[in-house]
Image 1 (cartoon, rainbow over the protein chains, first blue to last red):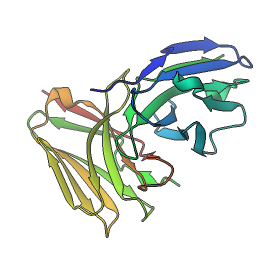
Image 2: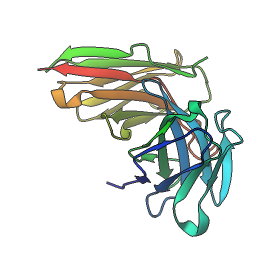
Image 3: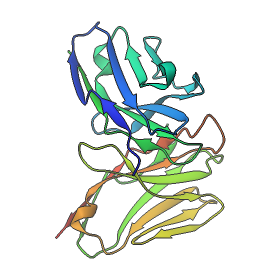
Length: 112
Length: 114
């Protein structure tokens, strides 16, 4: 089936550094999402993105977070600066319309 | 307060039994309810979904029973197999608002013993 690719699969960084998580969504999809999952807990919505703009973001989407999809390439989540509580698995998803979301395998972020 | 609640964080059944996973929700505006299956180290994958205009959706061994009045639903997995061992997330969204912003439950870890 359709695949969402996420790079990197795992990143370890020091607190205060910047990190960029990359997502290659399904090719003809129009809506893009980031979710955050802390080990053993539910997936929490961070943000969704359509037509070059953020549509909605949650309280978890702090000022240090930003998303973009320059020129139809990767959909990225940037965190600058990172904090210890940002350690989690970040899942990217995409959808063609308001229907089924396809998820990537996640990017595990460890902030030391 | 959780908007989507899954009553059991873990469930163990024997191979061949029917596994029943329960879910309830708070927001009456939710009208789309997918169940996602997640294996360790992988992303969640859509298993089956129902819209609030229906009370039952069946796909092979998987059936969703939906009760709009009680605001709950359940996923039944017939003839459970060891390969069904995974975490199952109930999710909900309001159609047409901000794309398809899914709200997830905490997940139920299903173990199917051979």
